[in-house]
Length: 604
Picture 1 (cartoon, rainbow, N blue to C red):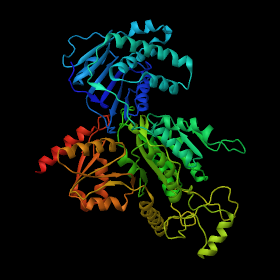
Picture 2: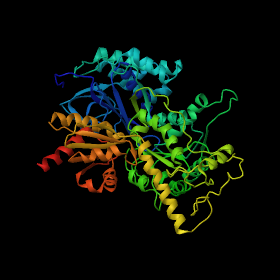
Picture 3: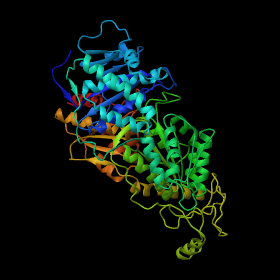
């Protein structure tokens, strides 16, 4: 049943399939083809944590305005999984389209939607493809049918498959046979409602498509990464795998033909962080990648690195916790833990990328900050950013020289002692900024060696339980984090001095941008600040001061960013209103709008 109004380049499609059935090829092909048509498109893969057989959903959004937040209900449903079909159909908007495998028998399908029964088995047989590939090629049927119904260009589908299979004809041809046969059948057998349609645009020119884990890995490699240790964990595994993929092409010395970056798969997360700390101590640009459960195990080593002032980067691609939680679902629930991680008095620099370009940028910038400050840097991404493919501007080569920080070699020690008129020691604050000069193995100067200890020490790295030495050391280290406020990425701010404002961070930026647009339609104007790093820069405090009510939007249960803002700005805490939610899915713009409007109505 058509609605009579055509939605052009502005609708949502969900593909409901079985995990392990090869649906990823079909779904990625559709997304890439729409992108090639110049139309902004985004997608989320919602999948189970088992290997095969469970339901999986691919939620795709076409948005001429470039919005990429999750939608709550579907306009088009492709139903290929009998186990979930009834529930999936309930989530279709009235006037929506249902494309369903005709072998799935459902009684009394809704009469406020248009249903198309796809003869999947018959079309596979008619395509004359190898029968052993049927389970994987079945999904290409809906590619062809959907292409006819909404106007996906067949030639660009073939180009997408060519890209997906790296030009391998033996893989491209059977897939295209099924697509074309399904398209021909649909053209001769189905009547379009015309409710949903694609029309070519020019909104993707010069853009790329990439996932956050790949972008982060590339950023680290371009930033001079020399060593990475990791242990497999969803959703961070593909970050380390991307390092391995690109090292042979990006990190080979042209003169010696030797690899200039090592990646080690450790036996567990404790070993991974231990190796990363050791490599950082030895002078290598070092990192590890993990998710929440792994970060828990890394806590003690992070405290050691903080106190011994060893630079390294830890990528935490967040998932739902606590415990094992939901390994394949997204969340922003490691923020408070990262802020307070490890025992005792300490501070950690936290970077919060909100898009693909920032995943790349923070990949190299995190290494710079770690070495400048001689401290661990935690980069909090999440499954939403890390494992889904997003449209992005081309990644920009680092526009700064690599900063190794205060490293001394043989000739430097004598020079700096003469200049500063004081004997160098590993923890002597020669410049008054809290950052001492370090030596690394290979420096042959007799004064260069020192004992690295996690116990209390004096400025010359000697063991000491003197209260004065302990306090002076911790106060000096604290000073570094005042400097950090000036060198970490500054927030992104849209400010017209309204009394109402929203603060968010990371992947929640996507639905917040759309929510602000929707709220404007309701005559509510909001300023917006997206936090990109901790410690908070001065701009955050100034933004808070000039607003009356501030909604803090985030994807966790307890409003963790709200908590940290209250800790850092206690005199402004009464302004913060937490808008927090965690169910394993990314936030939607409509949910944010509903929560904020409800709060605003209660204020009046």
